[in-house]
Length: 276
Image (cartoon, rainbow, N blue to C red; front, top):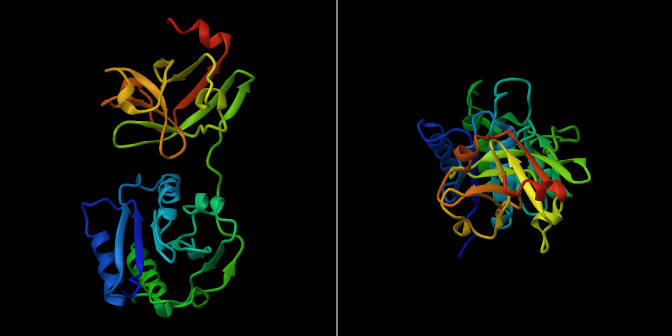
């Protein structure tokens, strides 16, 4: 069976408007045989970091030659560049605002081109809907195997940022931050097993996790291990420490949210607080 090109969509457009449907229409008009797959349209509005987290968690699970469109674009209509970024297996079509930063961090061989070949665009180009007029047709022509070289010159000064990293307060305290709250109310932090091996490793020391109004003293292997009303830590599928509750919203139970501090305390100070 002939290869059917795959184009994925990751946006902050939601589902209440026509935006996503129109993007699909543009793509299918150019390449009718394409499979258009929604990764997520619930990225937090204007939140480039949330978009970067979303695509970084998803892109590598798709077949080689998949084209990923990532549209979180608060600078639409300004001088920010539209780009196509290519690595060994995938193409990415996105605004040059850092939304691909976490992909860049994972892919050592990435070539980024400023999209300037306007004959691939829909005309006239709207100042407010580049997803329809620029990104969708470019993704479609990539799916038709137009060489990425034809869309514009390679650039080296593309926008990228590093996700916030946990910081050691002292030898027994590590401070991180909540990167996002998922739809279940789980608080996804930026703390990995490498950052906190004594908490998330095979052998744990006495610890407590301080977040919002709670001091947490349990890390479980599954959400269902938690008792009703208990807030606990868990190593989630994103590879980060999550603060969770069994069939409850940890965000509500702790009073914490995106951007909240998370502090891990190890040793005697943590043991002293276990009964509190």
